[in-house]
Image 1 (cartoon, rainbow, N blue to C red):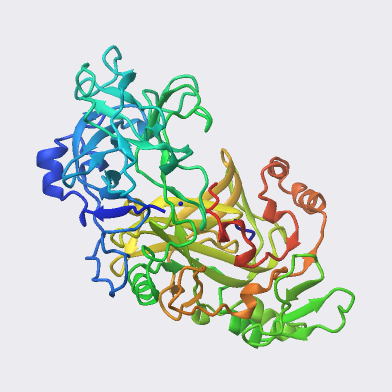
Image 2 (cartoon, one colour):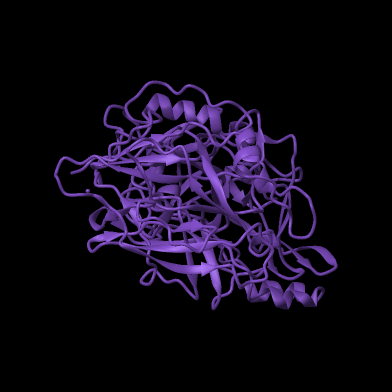
Length: 580
């Protein structure tokens, strides 16, 4: 499948999410559902199933302090509830709005926090303290507020009226978040701080948090989470955890809020985990992957694939393929995917068929360690290799399973799970599951865990897309589409067993991570074999006429038999993950 500036910031962190006691009795109260008196997911504070270990000693990782440039920032995960809506938003369950509490002395709020009621309580915002020695103020109070929205005159179900305010920053400063109140009086100007413009960066809207309707209204009022627009291993934007409240469409050029920005563009090493800490993180959080019970095309290690007859082909010399060394040392290095080289299965039928099936017992996770959000988070991108990607299967209304012949087949298949970990405390926040050419982020609060704090991933039958839950995911429209079937089986891969750290950027100055030669092979991991998809479908349409509706919705990776490129060629290698 084809996948996807000098001042000092100090990050202090409260090491626990709100305790269940505090959340339910002091802060949250009882948020009733919109249609009944059931307890909503947000009434439960998410905690990882097992205690977080004591991380090995290092510099700034999980120490509570991150040096980013004269502004100290504390990550707060304790909140007081301000206002709750009981309808609208995701699943029509409403949303809750909070302000941070337990703010360290000398620090100031940058914005309120909100999340849908449809998820367990789990989140953070940053608060800030000016600790620069230049004499130029990094923080200033707003000069006024503008009322963005009030529920006072609406008929929505809510615990009280809510008022959302936008700070008006002084010249040369930016607002990073809203203030939410439950009275019509403007908040105090001491309530929040704005940040000097050179410590801010453009942001964009992300996930929908709430709106009075059951779905997003492009012309109405909406609340969205926000994140830095530019994201990647060299990007300076820092996630603040606040939200944007707006009426009508919100484009990056019109968003009145900003994200923070770090100054240490070339050195995130202080806040990033060292090698022993990386290993400890892998042991704590490495996913458990289940293959489907009927899976014929298993993953394996690259060494197993090479040692069992994997071949390197060179254009113009197709009759003289070369056996690949176990570590890929004879593969052409770097360059571009120019079609001059490709890999393939063994040429003799016996080994061809055997290697095609893979061997999950040899499977290794190949880990790329990435700084994200200005070095305030660490991404562990964990890649696995399959020698072969099997054919697709369709669902056509009441006809549950229609084999698609060789549509979807190709040699070589790279898939991955990415763990997003807070560098403030080592908490696992999000998990990314690759799915065909894109994928999905899932909050840790919505993941399934096993063996402590290890998230579970399900590999789909034949196609190997990864999902957070077992069952059927249909790519298509209505009751017609491509099946992605997942289920538990006895074929289980623990990404924490036999893993290899293959890349850690340039930030690990004291440790050496040797990249294996195969990682710098930038050509295709399978041959390109063109066939007429239309012709293939027409054969099947004679028996299943509804297949005509599939032609416009088939994923691009199904439209030809062509091996993928390796992990280092993917856009997400230096950038953020692609979402569906």
